[in-house]
Amino acid sequence: PLLGLRLKNTSGLHLAQGPITVFEGSIYAGDTRVHDVQPNEERLVSYAIDLGTEVDPKVGPGTTRITSVKAVKGIVTTVTKVREVKDYRIANRSPQDRQLIIEHPNRTNQQFKLVDMPKPSEDTKEVFRFVVPVKAGEEKVFTVTEERDVASSVALSNSPDDQLKYFISLNEAPAALKTKLADAQKLKGTWDRNRLELAQVVADLARLNADQERIRKNLANTPKEAEVYRVYLQKLSDQEKEIDTLTAKQKAGMTAEFASKKSFEDYLANLSD
Image (cartoon, rainbow, N blue to C red; front, side):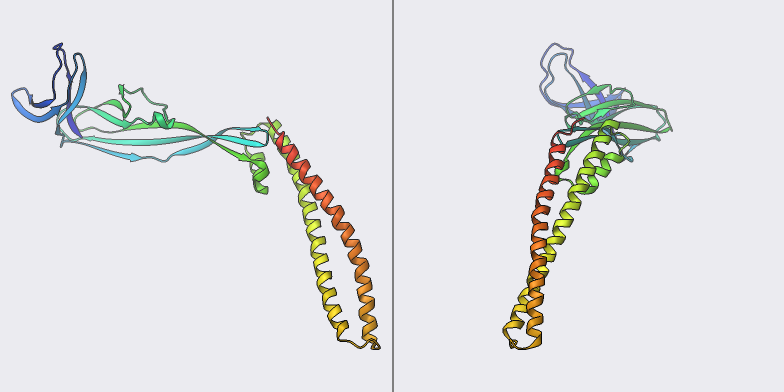
């Protein structure tokens, strides 16, 4: 850390920047330079390194916790409180008591707020200043704790299946919202089943069409009087009936899938709590 002093212009005149020599009593203590100082303006200036005092800043373990969950027209917004801690470990190995000024970055523009600690003695756009007295030979820790709220939003219609389960599991989610999300989950389940059924019908049709193509090639290379030729014809006839049935199921499945998807998305679009 640096040794410093407060310089206040009480002369009533503007003081231009220039060098200053500092004495402790009659003993030379160091040199510094100050910038322009207006009348009644106060400046904090450093003039030497304090070799007897050590300050070791360390970032402590942070925490996050969800504080609120809200839904508006299918968009779920969660607010997470982020807490960050920084410990300033101080050791005064000099024979004199010290009064330290800890300068901690001012992150108000990042929505951080100081919590669970004394107010700073001063604050500027760049730093907070905390006065910390430390007795000779003493070691102590000065902790700065800050919090900010971070909001994040998720559109449920575009989220994976487990997103609904996640929001339902949150203790911070209101009971009414959990009920609505559970209803949405049921609608999503209906849509999923219809999609799977339709996909199976489409796969069966593709399989039959491929098999028919194989049989037709075999027919082209088989004499009409051969027994297997009649077998191929009968198989084609049976498959045509199966294809007709599957085609009807596909049409009905597409209608059901579209309707269930629309029901789910319409429900989400109006889901609010």
